[in-house]
Image (cartoon, rainbow, N blue to C red):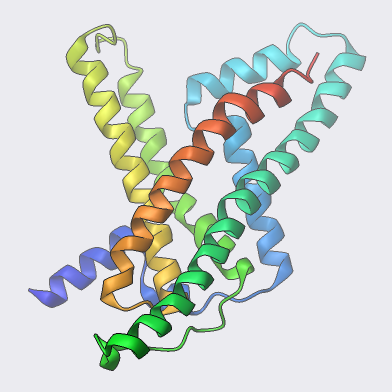
Length: 226
């Protein structure tokens, strides 16, 4: 039963050995930031992506098309940088703080002393890569769900459908936070007393920053287009 549980967690939250193998290489980090920026810019709804493309590039004068194309690259990079850095750097600092508190707690109480492990090369870049990797799990599922809910035979005005959408949205947020939490735990080697608390921190921060990011930052940057 435990093996089955571990295999399921490896599928849903990525294997711990994958998180352990992450490095600080800049090339892969930059590539990941670009990917996240593209996802933030284009979204996970195919209909939205197509509508955005038509709005920016169809029926426009050539100078406007060139301007929008250049601005799209710039906005994509800015979104990726802001998303990855503002999500992960605070979580890295918080995790590093709680790792010190964990050591103090165990030293003072002796509780779970046998489970204490030193962190494995904890760096902000590795936490960023965990966050980037989570997109490769979450985004395909989000795209499929967005497509299903956009089908014509689904009554989107129905309270049942609206409530289902809300539940699915929250589950995806929990899933993303769980993937990131597992990666942080793999890097910092928190004991069981701190692992669940770290999940609450990750989920809360992602929820708060996600709201600010979607409502303020993305909307403001989209106004730069012609």
